[in-house]
Image (cartoon, rainbow, N blue to C red):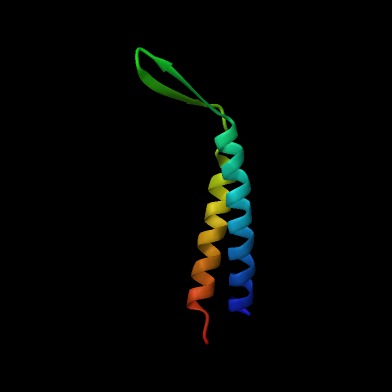
Length: 67
């Protein structure tokens, strides 16, 4: 049971992290001032953090399951 749940959470976490990571990258703007690149991010990091947590929980459940 733990192994199946771990695999599902890992796959969902990977997909959600990829999707929210791309959204965060799209919401970031960069510009140059006096030769220095400045990156301004207006992204919402909460979905990215939640998807990473789901990924980590899935990996932990998957790795701790009895074989």
